[in-house]
Length: 191
Image (cartoon, rainbow, N blue to C red):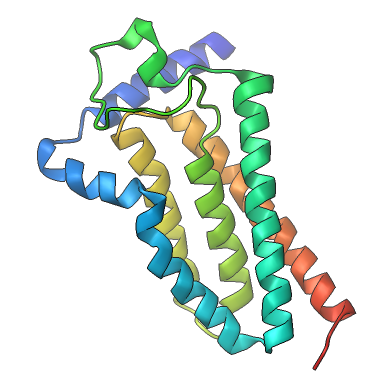
């Protein structure tokens, strides 16, 4: 059963990855680069700041930093200790069957995707926090996070299962840390 799932995942990766073209490579490389999203993160932080007083905003930023650290470290635990599934670009069995858009594909192991988990955690946390004021924002954030996951398949560094697992864990992490933030804000309300 597990072997069949891995085989199906590999075939789906090869199919989705090969849908890419040189015309779109630059766009997806730009999209997948975390540094390029700093203005977007600043905008999200500003929207949170407008909703909270300064002290509560600083508390929320601390919770977000803890969430990203938590999500990142659990991702690394799965990649390097628990699962150790080779990234497509380190899998000799499928060499030459897919497009590797970037020269460096990351570490040896790729289950599950840190990009997918971190972006989905941010999307869920921010959506829950701002949904009452910005009703359209959760939809935008979900599309952004799903596209971030897809970008990892497109450029050739993650299998679809890596991405879906990362998104599921990220959604759980975002929800968990949203609840933590709500608890801390009610406990330490400093108006």
